[in-house]
Length: 260
Ligand SMILES: Nc1ncnc2c1ncn2[C@@H]1O[C@H](COP(=O)(O)OP(=O)(O)OP(=O)(O)O)[C@@H](O)[C@H]1O
Ligand SMILES: [Mg+2]
Image (tube, rainbow, N blue to C red; front, side, top):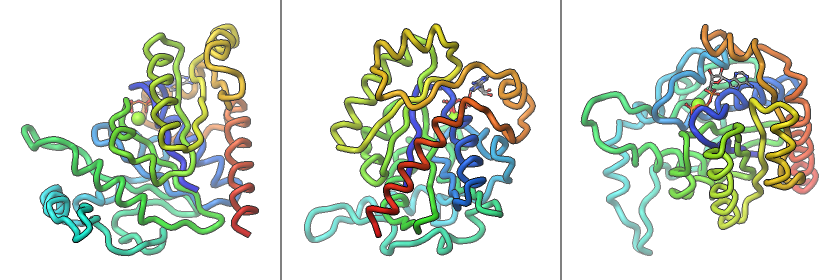
């Protein structure tokens, strides 16, 4: 199962990605965290894993992707970057860090002044995810750049579940409505996680969004904030993550039953 996390800047996407990944690892799943954020660098620290070589570097840089994007197949479609399906084990080992069932892959970061737009990163993310095949005990968690650009690019087309992280702000709630509408167009399931919300604020937000759509409420956590400052791994068992983890475990079990 491929699970994409999205939401407003700073809402807690990477924090939830790291906490969920560690919880699923503890449940015996092999978890590949895909860092598809072309700007921020914090996820590897939150996971406690070294940053591997970027996939973009491995395949020859943005120019290599652009060259592929320029090629058009006979049927008029753009040629994909990858021609074959691959499993987690097939990914070049220098592009994956981690062990014991928790792994990190980075698509690519913007590094240089004037290097041009990040479109090739979006193309690579979409192409990588559409060619990634997962076993029954594998999960991919995709942490994305803030906003809705990846939704506009259709990255959601190759994922199975979208989780939108909402912080208690007008901006975040407005964006979540946009995310909901866009993901619905893709016909993929989308659910919300409220972050940094006390129960009073959570009730107000849930009244707006609808109870069924919200799968978890994570209050402000001093340890999370402190580790966010020092860059220490998020080795924390947050009780508030239990409902999010249970929801995902149920979805994984349903997928296994449907596949059987
Ligand atoms: N529940 C929480 N309690 C306290 N601090 C939190 C909580 N959730 C996230 N934070 C802190 O808020 C900051 C932003 O979180 P995070 O990096 O996960 O957000 P993001 O959505 O991934 O941001 P970006 O859009 O920049 O990628 C971090 O410093 C993190 O430690
Ligand atoms: Mg982030």
